[in-house]
Image (cartoon, rainbow, N blue to C red):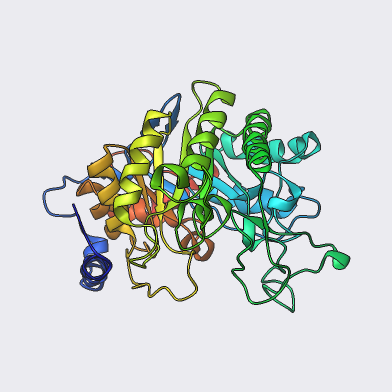
Length: 401
């Protein structure tokens, strides 16, 4: 289906307005039309290869800026542990650098060396013991690397090399931010080296106990910067045509899939649209999803934006759901919906209408780690309480009142 930026924005806004209106009218506390009590799709297990998620609630990858030299800390254990106990089905660790230079900030998580494995395994062991599947997002920040974390006084400013920063890289030497070093254009050998780093990081992730691997090809970071014509102006086999701009994506997917056990699901997060008619489009996303499916990707995590500082994004409730819907329907592959999904009825409607297969919550799970408890109470699924048995008795009491 051909859809220009204006009509796509209109579709996204209409979907968001409808979801917001439903929540306002109190539908979050009542069964959806045609849905029998105890049959919530949100709490239906999702099978991805050899992994069964206990429900369709996932924690979206969110940077915690709490690492030194890439190592996980007690903060990460608490962050993931609370949401595993809280009932989510899948927890995806933040954008995790496959090389030291692949981090967004010096305080981002990493998995570029074997020494990172034990601290990560401590987290995955806890998450799995409490019923959730641990996942990890493997990433390279590309032109957006070597930035101060939002927790620092000079948030998002470039970290100079003499202060512990590093040289950003990208498909070309074109800047994204106004400060810092211009990125170094990667040679073909360097591109292939980064692909190998993704595959090696995937192997370490499996050794660390992660059941689900996600590749980060969104938000203007390295993977997305190759896909988007707004960021990639190369003239060799990694730039120009759609086939060439997707070459790094497909080569990386292929290398990672080959490095993983057959039973390990592979997800890819994409920016489904640049929100710019000159950029990456929803039609491009559908075609790329078909290619990824053929290479063994099991689900597309559908976000948007990040390639242009001037994009006009119609942010609102569920504004990215139309991307997940179109990729799912036109590429015949499971998708995850993300972006201002906050109410259980809103999430349930997305799944019930077959617009996506998985609901990814970001900020809402920061605000409400036990969101799954509320969703279970409101939707009344025919399933055991989704939270730790140590707390389940209190939830049962709440439900009886």
